Length: 114
Image 1 (cartoon, rainbow, N blue to C red):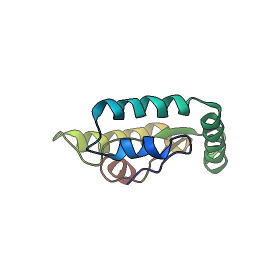
Image 2 (image 1 turned 90 degrees about the horizontal axis):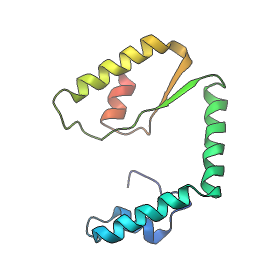
Image 3 (image 1 turned 180 degrees about the horizontal axis):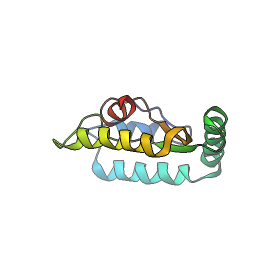
Image 4 (image 1 turned 135 degrees about the vertical axis):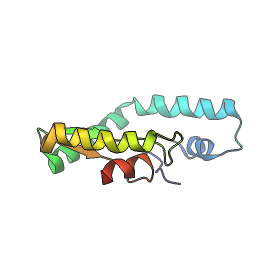
């Protein structure tokens, strides 16, 4: 899949989250378990390490903005809106802002290219 299993998720939980055929109740329970594990100490340590890495690479004083979104646009005006936001944010923030994506098609790609 496009996403990597975080260390705090079990194989069973990850399998449920990837399955289109899993019962909704089981999938929902897996989401709750993963979110609770994410809030634990291991996840906090991993998040802190990632923040440190990003700050080292992008600059201590950078305003780091994570761009998330779907791999396709569902509404006719969505792509135009994303492109306009990218241009306006870049113009307003300049080199102070650092935009981070997961490299996915759709919203992230459109933002990154504009």
